[in-house]
Image 1: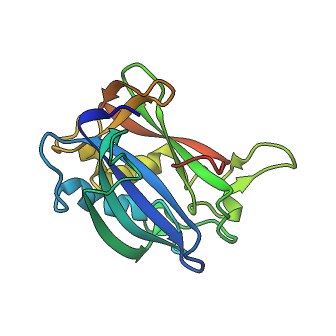
Image 2 (image 1 turned 60 degrees about the horizontal axis):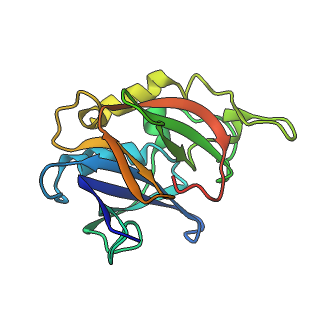
Length: 218
């Protein structure tokens, strides 16, 4: 595969694990742009830590951030190559702290996730984010063979999401933010191994509960 690089663009992999069974792991991935070389002390990592911690329940651990240069092909491709650096956390998540009181019932398994989209003002599809370990039994409803429906819309609402984004200062990395590190969506074709647009004028939009698929990486 020919080398394809997105200029000044990097990827953060947030690695999670189930606290009771650390062999169960998953990740969320955030692309961002910065005109200078990333450093572990950058504000995007400081702000992403409380945000990422708020996106799972206390029975989950936020293990680490792995930071990569956005590149496909070549000897060191993301995400199978060597990261630029790793930031270890190994701390319990705290969704109830920012989202409010959790619904009754056990945490749902990884088959049910909360979907958010990174909506942008340019062309192309939004970037999907699927959060495992965030919902409880009392947060959703479904019928046999039917879709999963988010019922706890009082807790899991766009208003609460906007509040978390502001409280954790992740708004500094979204559209209109003042940070030097801006989250972005990279349009890339696996089939043709070609780079399309890079849009960093994005915002988070809560969509609702959905079924997790094993092929999803986010």
